Amino acid sequence: GTLENTLRISRHLYKKGISAPAIRPPTVKQPRIRITVTASHTAEDIERLIKALKECKYYGEGLKQIIIHPPQPLPSREGKQKGVRSRKRKQRE
Image (cartoon, rainbow, N blue to C red; front, top):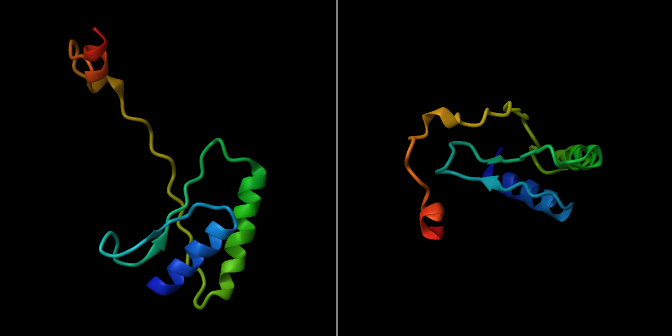
């Protein structure tokens, strides 16, 4: 959608208590909304999000598509160098 619609949708979600920032050029080619769902969100939180997103169809072009990215695995700890202490640990010693 357009930058104007993206900002409107982001503000609409914010008014509904949902933090969903607008990601704008030059960070991305096309403006978009970033929504992050975590394990701490409840089923009620997800339902509120879905309801708020459905309301966005009244904003100009509305939402064109929703892309869901699967969660990424945490980095492996195997790659850490042995014998190297973190800055915090060095400060405590």
